[in-house]
Length: 248
Ligand code: BTN
Image (cartoon, rainbow, N blue to C red; front, side, top):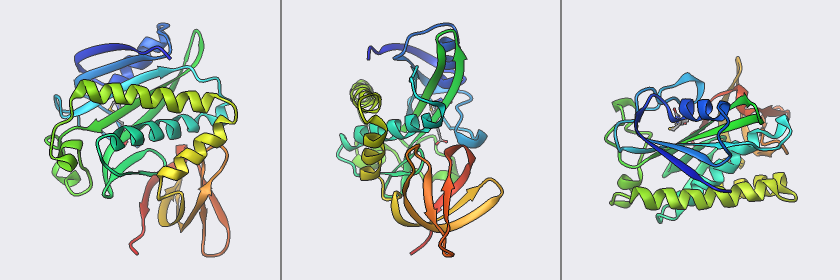
């Protein structure tokens, strides 16, 4: 994949800009980076705090030729890529289904995939927010978020971070598009996530709260949760609210 980078000092949201660029015909691999976002967004309409230079605020345009049921694999593929990127800094990341990258059980990165129709077919814009330092965390996040600087004791070089991210995305995306790509992506994701199997969790799924033990992923990336009554609940990324590990 050819990456082309578009840098901005300030944007409302790199995802919004990349969605516009996709609709205007930009190529796969077009990336948008901003030093700050004034309306960065996360899943479920949450805000993503994005003060200047405190995080990598990055979005990439993809045109995956996947059946719509398999589109959630794009989020998993990105989770693999970001987990591998963070690991390059000597950290031991975990992936909390479906899109949170954690270090020491604190969130270091979030991923927001959004789709749009374009003249060349459906596009997915994958937004990645990696915490470089913790200056922007609102007090209520202080206990549950971390940053590369906080974990390693030094500030990563932004260009080096972007280079590693490109390579990791290219590798994970090629694997997903290749022979047996869905299965390989699920396997790779499961190898990097303690949430994949045997984790006691509580999940808000639509109007329901489900408690149980994780039991692997479905072929399309949905999470299987084995309930105490023996039923397996299948949780789809689009329906899930909060997912948390239950205290041991
Ligand atoms: C989440 O964990 O809820 C997802 C957070 C995604 C944040 C990134 S920062 C770059 C891109 N632009 C946005 O507005 N959001 C994503």
